Image: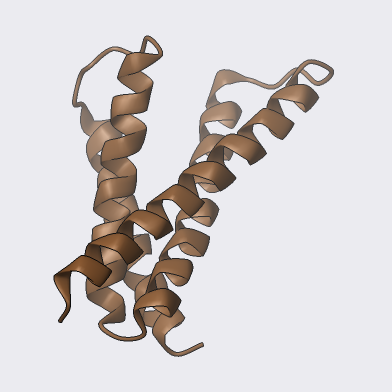
Length: 122
């Protein structure tokens, strides 16, 4: 495995996932100005947006890599969660690692892994 291309493709997938997350979240926030939703519903919608962006990012990375789909998807999922965590801290979130964070990390890893397997076969 060529490590330079591997890291470049993982970074490419993470950037795609982050761009999609920010774009869809910005569009969703425009609707939030007109619609009132509860805090729990907002968290669920944010997790769904993150998961769908991660699927796209993992598929982009795996298609660029061409092989080792589950490894690339796993790396994209891990780096994506770490990037979201760091960005959240930069913008004022509390730097705690609770059960919600653990579940979200596990979900990112699992979705990245499955999306990598899917992406290599597309």
